[in-house]
Image 1 (cartoon, one colour):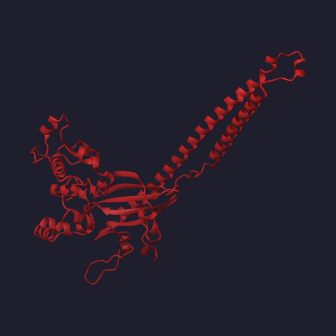
Image 2 (cartoon, rainbow, N blue to C red):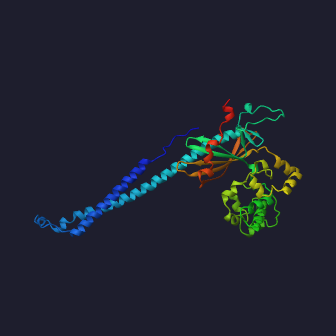
Image 3 (cartoon, rainbow, N blue to C red):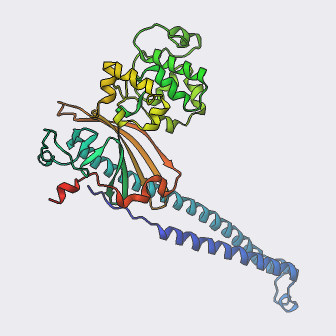
Length: 389
């Protein structure tokens, strides 16, 4: 997909700005030179000029008037140059935002196409066409080529756009902490890992659980309608959260979130309605350690529970995926956009739904942003094994 090309540079604006500044400075310098000369000469007129019938006042009127006009013109030109310079800088910023938006749009379209036509398999999505999935193995399980498998555990691929490459990371939402479905004990541990006091984290987890459940029974350290009414706050929705901004309406959360990096919080959580337990195949090992799900006792408890054990051991992705898009514009600034896409099965009129998470400017080097190993990344839009045939 191509868009109308917009010129990248506005060099003529900078040239005009520099020329106007030079004219303004030259006029100012000329004004001060003439003023210095007049002060040194004392505005004296030669004697032979007095014999021509004009007074000193008449002879000295034109020159100060011209000098005043030059001074005013120099000031006006300098102000105009400053305005033009700020305008050109604003146009350049708008141009950068336009290029970033077009690059993100192209990457989203290609990622969406790959996600919708891909086949869910163990560990992620098979990007190869169905007729080219792979050859059946002896044990009756279809094998997927490594280049065709896009892992849902955070694998990064690349999308080439007109304005430069965009890195796209695929994360299945079952590997994130769902603030709408995860057990409050796990949410409490997660909040504590964000450097929040245990007592505050316990209250935040309890009030969140009371806010999202349909009943009106208050948990210990939680909050229901009476607690909100006492503090003159809107009553709890008693339904799942629809966006992260709704956390500001949950009791104790506005104060608790003051010392939390909101972007770090959103990177590891989701508002998707999951099964209530994370799939270990798509969960980062550090997050599992943080939540205490990697300990031997917890592993045994999960195995003893038929439901949690089945969910934790499932390695097939869900119908909802999170995509983290990273773009580096020509000015060297890194932008990051996070979205979620959900497949809508048996719904040809609306085959998918897109959810916005956030977008921000990332202050980090090319190595940390993933652009240092850009030549080693696989492409999203096509399957290398399929194209080679």
